Length: 351
Image (tube, rainbow, N blue to C red; front, top):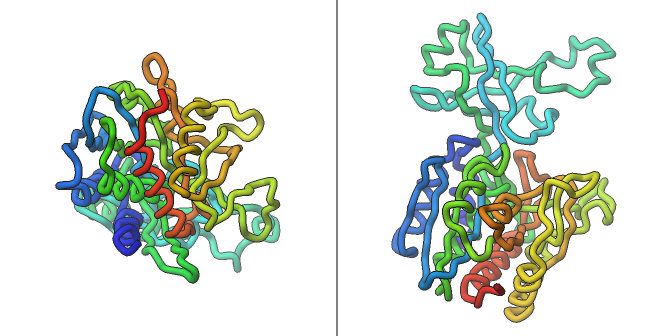
């Protein structure tokens, strides 16, 4: 598992906000050189590695982007206001160290807000929202900020290192979906596919499944799989029925996902694809969990609607605290996800 952990570390600590995924793509190319038949990069920015024989094809997608921020305005005193890219709970932002990706390179800053000591009682009782926060890069004026190379529209990412916890768990940023990227990288490295496998590392999933939409159209696979993270609820303040997935019990095969009130806008997997994933897992003695996920979806939703339709499914890595900047997963689960993806690549397609 050492190699897999180091791949995850490199990918987690890299910076790849939606629309600015090049650093992540560079790491993936570096990891896969000599292990695949070739690469392409489409006009939108998706990275596509391919391997294996034949005309029939399996597309497996993992997204490179992470939830992030973008410069919205710069005030006369040199403080930066921002907008959010993807779903971030505002309370997590204040006090975070950030990197602003400007034209002259990276600029470090911190997210600040009014000190609690000077808040009125009414303010203290309210949730602190992102529009009441700002980024301090140490500048004294808007002109100084611009001299640093920062302009409206520049991307901002949170800066975190991966850390190892007890019992084979690790914590870090952007496991959604650098964990999926790491699993897909390792699987296609090791696999001897029975068909043409397209490992697609997609862009801008967090802001609308955009990369998978165009990649699925271009590749026109026979079967599509998304590999992503899903919510592990095995911690305080969660009832089992809210999120029954547990860390350590193996990767998750999604039975359905979508909006919380109706599961609309998500994926109901093709039954034959879902059964195929489950059968392969059973045959290879890979433990797995089944989940109906309310409140989220994956690139598979876009893949299944490509052209005339692509039968699709999802393999997910159980992860605590998804869309925070300290997500937690089990390296053992991640390794099991690698084994499952590799086994799917080496199996006959179900249709």
